[in-house]
Length: 196
Length: 220
Image 1 (cartoon, helix red, strand yellow):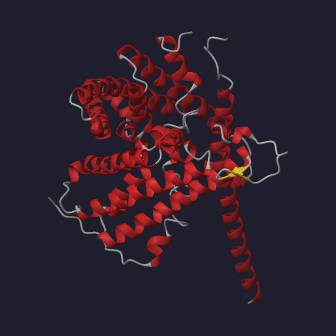
Image 2 (tube, chains in turn cyan, blue; image 1 turned 90 degrees about the vertical axis):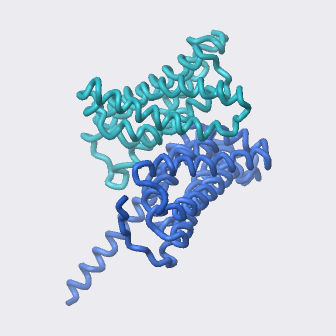
Image 3 (cartoon, one colour; image 1 turned 90 degrees about the horizontal axis):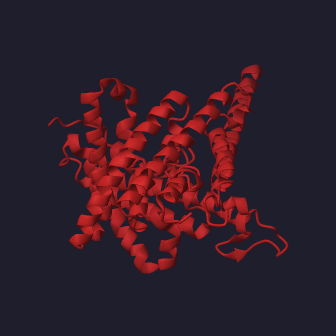
């Protein structure tokens, strides 16, 4: 597959270079809200949506920044855009779908400090993706994030029933699990490359 | 605007030391995990990342503490983020000027210091309530604690994954490096390992104190 093609970018962001398990972006929500499958699913959906919105915004902002030759303001403007995008999404949800808004609860505002979102905006700028490629990249990253979160929460729900030594309960166990998941995802390396 | 009065903390040695052990941002509070796992595949990267974060922590802590009476409560988080982003941009360009190799190996993670929850957490929970002196000392302690934690991970991963420390070979040439340690899964395993070690030490200490109490109770 052509590395510039939309399918490759999507697959790469979702599986091969999974944002959580290969690039270590968004570890805080990955460890924080992966205790139950339901919350993990809501968090994944919310993140996916914010990723899409902020990716589009970041694409527009970058055009402006390059046009006026003020790229050193990139970081500040991106984070401001993401924070306001999250705020907008929150207000829109509250107005149009109060049920969903209640389900998301505290997770929406927390997404502002999710480094996967800022990372996505920065990566798409570094790699000079065009608009369609950026869209594919952001959807892929969102799908990958949700996938990792769902896998982790499924494992942790099972783990509640397992007997583990008292030293390894809690964070240490989750990290070991994440390591194994990440090891499994390494098996996807090279997927979609021209030799396969 | 209502002013909330907070107890002003006296600057003691504890203000500094707390960040290193008792409230270590990485090992105890589990904050700012993304850079901790991502850039610790070598000791040098770990040190650079730790120092960059230390600078941003101290600088933003100072500014937030100086401006704490002027920032309206409603927009405080946005203000903190803008302050942090300013310092991160400075660090970003400085590292680019000092060493392009280092800049390339750290990649986007220098700019991602903006969303490191340790920094925002300190600004919100400490710097915005305390005097400048206390805020600076506390930020220094947190920064040193963060750097030490990065170093703990970085050295172990480089030693096992490449057989070197800071690029100098430690083992004999026959040593077969465990490549997985410098790859992403290694980050999770090593951090998990350190957490296990600390938990074990904590539980052993608790058992010892219990036994000591039991012995004195029995003796009397």
